[in-house]
Structure formats: structure tokens, C-alpha cells
Amino acid sequence: MMFSAMFNDLSRWRGLYTEARVECRRDLRMPDTLIATLSFPAFFYAVFALMFDFGGDEFDGATYLLATLGAVGVIAPAMLGCATVLANERRSGWLELRQALPLPAGGWLLAKLTSTLMLALLALVPLILLATVFAGVRLPLTDWFGLVSTLLAGLVPFAILGLAIGRYGTERGAGALANLIFLPMIFFSGLMIPVAMFPEPVKQLAIWLPAFHLGELALHQMGMREGSTAGHWLALATWSGIGVAVALAPVWWPRGGFPLQRSTRTVVKDQ
Amino acid sequence: MTGDTLSEKPLVRLEQVDCRRGGREVLKGLDLEVHAGEVFTLLGPNGAGKSTTVSLILGLLRPARGRISVLGHAPGSLAARQATGAMLQAGSVPVGLRVRELVELARAGYPDPVPERELADLAGLDGLLGRDWDRLSGGQKRRVLLAMALAGNPRVLFLDEPTAGLDVPAKRELWNTIDALREAGRAVLLATHDMTEADALTDRVLLLQHGQAVALDSADGLRERIPDRRVRCRTALSPTEVADWPEAGHVRRHEKRLEILTPQAERLVARMLRTDPELSELEVRAASLEEAFMHLTDHEQNTREAA
Image (cartoon, rainbow over all chains, first blue to last red; front, side, top):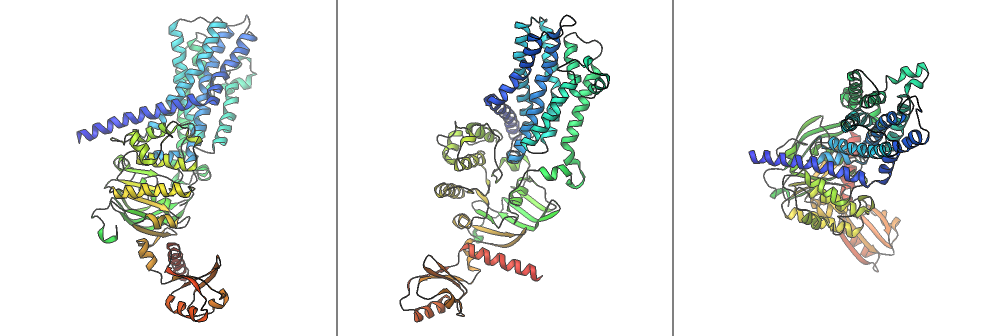
């Protein structure tokens, strides 16, 4: 009995480790994912911070954009990546086959989170290089660590929102919907242009968007914001809760009759 | 293995199982037992309930009523999953993975997995381990899925349409593997609508239609349930002429031969020989499993309609 429990524990850990490793390797082999992840925030940083000297003499644009585009860099793989991957794996039947294997229940989620963290970290590397080498951003080591860890911790609600989107619809549909939410969200959250530059009614919108709160947390780490960060963390936790509720709605819906779920679930060819 | 020699304790048991999907009843009062060392086939047309049955046993679906046990465990429990392997109909894998990674992933969950090299030999993965899944042919993908199903050295193997889309040599190769597994004492539950496959592999067949069991027997037993035999010959007689005879059932011309399905083969052959002394290449054989299937499902349909 004791040996059986030990074996199960061992195979559980092996399952978790293998799934996470395989997922990371797969992401590293996908050139389109890698290029998009690495180049998207770095490109905008190069254009706005280096070419156009964003901020000018009024404020430190290079540091500001390092924080906000860093947030963009971690949100993109979390939200877009999780949405398309879940939609693809759900529709292809892999989730069913995986469920029949004795792999640990949380292994899939852990693997996705690990690979998302890896991609997010990779997205920050070129950004940090551009900021330090070309824009002359200098920070104490603790601030660098604080920025990176805040951004990585802050990607969790976006990964959950991505999974909530991927729970419904096809791979293309989920990808398109995730982009449709992602692009306006990062713009209106002040991650490309500071919220202060928006007209008043648009400024009010930002506070309702999760990306705004991650941006504010990153700016706080850079010493560009003061006061408590609790409100921003609470906002991100609330958005995580909303994501979980949307993702699990079909499970909780009475008698399994959730409208979106019925039209988009995995097609079983033969009943 | 026949019904008489089945081992005492079934590895898989379903008792009075009902299942509803999308508000529709897809399985009604299903009973079945799968024993060690047998290939048990679920045979039926599309929509009969074969894949639903497999999904229920794997714990992917929950029954509305009835009991299911897999080696004495609840379906979908860790103990049940560690003792079984599945090759599913919709079992595609995520893009971007290599064969070795898929095998590694499947092996990772089992306490005592089959070594990679042995698994590759068993499923015929020679030279495929380093390849990308996306670049494999249909047959190669099936072999990888089989390797994943065999990764934990399962006592019960579930195969849902395992040879769909395979060419004849690949199909034969997979059949040989299934035969070897049966010889090794494993139980195989096969869901298929391929009659040749069912005929070639099966010890017992459960015929399903509209979610209900129509018949449970060996392939030979099912064939014997229909009185018709198939008479084929080369003859100058026309199909319409023979069709008018009371001894003849369904008549058709096939590849320059006349083919007649009849419950009175001896009388029909005697009359044909009298009428056409030039008759040649005469063959009389039992009805095929497909004919038995058609007969039994038609009979069931007529009974339902009459009711």
C-alpha cells in the first residue's frame, strides 16, 4: 500500500515535470510564436523609446515604456497563447485523449503556465537589452528583479482570461477574439500611450481594464508611481475570478445546457 | 476464446447503463462484460453508441443510470487509468510535438511504463521517434497513438476505429499486434464499423443499434443466426429469371457472376443445375458478417417500427 502510494507520487511528479518540459520545448520549436513573442514589444520599444525619444524632456520615456511594454510583452503570450492553444487542443480531441491517460489532473494547466512564463520571460529579454544598451536605462538589481517578478506574477489573470476565451470556439475564432480584446485593451490601458494623454471619458475606461493595473504595478516597481499597490493586485485578482467563472460556466450551468458550449464543443464523429 | 471459456471475473463490466447527450438518449440499458484474453467488439453503424460506450468506460462521460467498473475501479479513476490504454477516434495530438515526446508524455503517468525501445518495437515506430507528429502519414500517426495506448502495459486496451483510413498492409500489421496482445492475456475492447476487422479479430461481438444491444455472440454465432447462404456461379440465366424462383432471395449480377442470397441453397443449386447444365464456378458459403449485421439490424428496426 505504502509502495503503491510512493509510486503514484513519483509518477505524479514525473507526469507534471514531463508535461511542462514537453510544452516548453514545443513552444521553443515554433518559430511563429517565438518571433511574435520576442519582436512585438521590442519593436514598439525601438520605435517609440529609441527612434522618437518618447517623453522628451517631460518624463523618462525609456523607463516608462520599459514598464508598460514589458506588461504588453507578458500579456501577449499569456492571453493570445492560452486562448489558441486551448481551442486547438480541445477541438483536436487531445484533451479527451489526455484525460484517458493517467497524467496528473493539474498537469495540463501547470504545463501551460510554465511555458507561458518562459515565453513571457523571453519577451522581456530583448526589451531589457534595448533599454539598458541603447536607451541607457539603469536600475538597481533589486528593481530589475522586482519588475520582472511583478510582470510574471501579473500575467496569471491574462492566462486565465485566455483560457476562458479558448474554452469556446475554434482555434481561429478564439485567436481572433483574443486579439480583438487584447489590442484595444493594451491601447486603452495606457500601455502604448500614457492614460494621462487620453481625453477624460477614455481615461475613466482604463481603470476597468486589467492591463491598466498590471502597467501601474510595473510603473510602481520603476519608481514612477507612489502609494499602495493593493488596489491593483485586487483588480487583477478580480479579473482572474471573472476568467475562472467564464471558463467554468458550462460546468456550473444547469443540466449542461450552456448555450455557447453546445455549439462549439469537440465534435465526436460517432456516438 | 468463446463465451463458454471466458475467465470468471470480467475486467470491464457495464450494468444497465443509460447515457444521454444533448437531451437525446444515446445508450439504453446496456450490459457488457469484457474478459482477459479476449477481443470484444462493439459493432454498429454510425450513431449506434460505440464511441459513447468507450467514453463512458474511460470516464470521459458519465452515465445517466447504471453501473460501470474497470478492474473493480470507477471509470476515470487513477487506478482504472493506470491499468488501461486508449486509442481514441478523435485522438489527435497538439501540433508541434515530436513522436518521442508523445511517447514520453504517455509513459510519464504510469508507475511501471514499457521501456521506450520496447514500445517502439511493439507499435512499429522504427525511425519515427525523432519525427514531427505533423509530418507523419495517417498510418504512422495511428502507430504512434497505439504506442501511447500501450505505454503503461495495460491490462485492458480500448481501440476506437483503430484502422480507419489505413491501407491494407498497415491494417494487417495492426491486426497482428492486437492478436499478439490477446495472446498475452490482455483484454481488447474494439469499437468499429469495419466488418472485415470485426470478423478478423473478434472473439465476441456486441451489435449495437440506436444505443441498444441487438445481439451478443461470436462472429460465427452471428452468421449462424441468419438462415441465408450465398450462392455464386457463372451462368447464362438472367437475374430476373432466377429472382422469380421461390427458392431465391436477393439476386444480383456481380463481376459476370450471379450472386444469390437464399435460405434454401441446396434446392436452388439443384434447380439451377437442371436449368443450366453449362453452369460453372459454383460456390456456396455462409453469409458474411456484414450480411448477418444487415439482417439483424433490419430485423431490430422492423421490430421497433412495429412496436
